[in-house]
Amino acid sequence: MGWTLMAFGLSGQAATTIYTDPAVFLAAVGGVVTEGFDGLPEPGNELGETRSFSVGGISVVASTGSELYTAGSALDIWLSTVVPEQVIDFDFSGDALYAVGGNFFTSDVSGYRTPGSVEVMINDATSYTVTYSVATSFVGFVSDEPITRLSVVAVQPGSGPVWPTANNLVFGGVSVVPEPESAMIQGLVGWAGVMVAMRRKRR
Picture 1 (cartoon, rainbow, N blue to C red):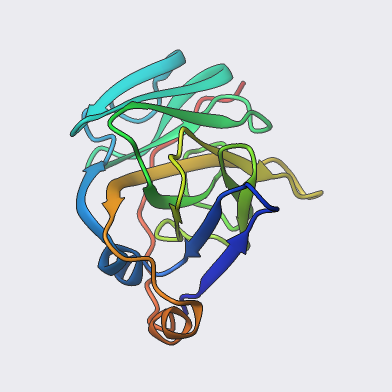
Picture 2 (cartoon, rainbow, N blue to C red):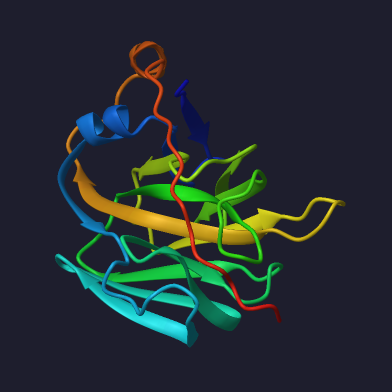
């Protein structure tokens, strides 16, 4: 089941709409482009602390405090980290970006999707936490101010580590920001699925 939430900042701060249904997000956003990470090395590779992408008119730099890591399968590569507690930061420059979303979830030491919670935040302010995530768990943000950073961090359970994982980042300009009442009704459409993944090296 998908939901749409409105997050309002204090006076002078951005108002942001948060989507958990990709169809509703795409309906509110015009001219999207997607980065699926499928051009990265096969799963099981360390990528260094940063990785740069160019998506339409948006320049994206993914970074973490240790090493980025490829998880997923050869048919669907995911971006993760070597150290489970590390944050994945996506910094944006180039064309002004007002809408960004993607699939955000947790994976295990073997690179398989595993149940867990992941927090997604934009501009170090507005955030949303996905609980019991799956590989198609979607979070999208539409803001009335430019989005310059998106951060992803896994909420570590007591039972063992989980890794923050991202896939299918979607970027676009805003055509319409729905009213919260109509968006809530539209947001009831669900979206689910799980992908098979490769083994992650133990660190």
